[in-house]
Amino acid sequence: MEFPEAQYAIQRILELCRIKTPIVVAVDGRSGSGKSTLCRWIAGQVDGVVIDQDDFYAGGDISAWQRLTPQEKADRVISWHRVRDEVLQSLLDGNQATWRPFDWDSMDGLAPESITASSAKIVILDGAYSSRAELCDLIDMSILVVLPDAVRRERLKQREGEAFVSEWHALWDEAEDYYFGQARPPQAFDVVIDRSVDP
Image (cartoon, rainbow, N blue to C red):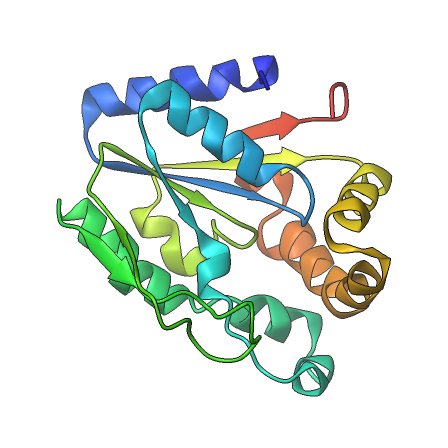
C-alpha cells in the first residue's frame, strides 16, 4: 500500500535526522484510522523501528473503566511511564529496549514472553494517545492520522467483529473525543495526514 499523502511526513523525518539521531516520531489517531499500516510503511521508507503502544494498555476491569470520566480514561488507558522508561529512553540512549506486553489473549496482566527492540535512528511510536503530554519532551515529531468515523467503524467491525466494536465504542469514544478535541487537537500536531480521499 502506498501513502502519497504521507510524503511530506517522510521529508520532515529525513530533515530531522540530518540534525540529530535518534529521533522519535509519534503516530497518533483514533482507533481504526490506519495508524499501524502507515507506521509500517513509514518504517520501510526510512528504516525505522515501530513500537506498538497497544503493548502498554493498562488493562483492568471494564466496570472500573466505565466509572471514570473521559479525561481519566484518556490519562490512564496507556501505561505511559512504561513506554517512556522501558522503551523510549532506552532506545534514545542507543540501547536495546525490552518489555512485556499486555496479555491480550487473557485480557489480564502482562504476557509471559518479552519483546525486544534494537536501537535505531528513527523510532516510530504507533498508537492512540502516543503524543500525550507526558511523552512530548522525547518526541521529535507528532503525526495525526484522520479518517471519517464511518470508515473507521467499518474497518474495526471487519477486523474485530461487531460485538467487540460496539462495546469498544461505548467505552472509549468519549475518551478519544476528549483527547483529540481538548488534550491533543489537530493544531497541536506537526503533521496531519487526512486519509479521507483514499482510505
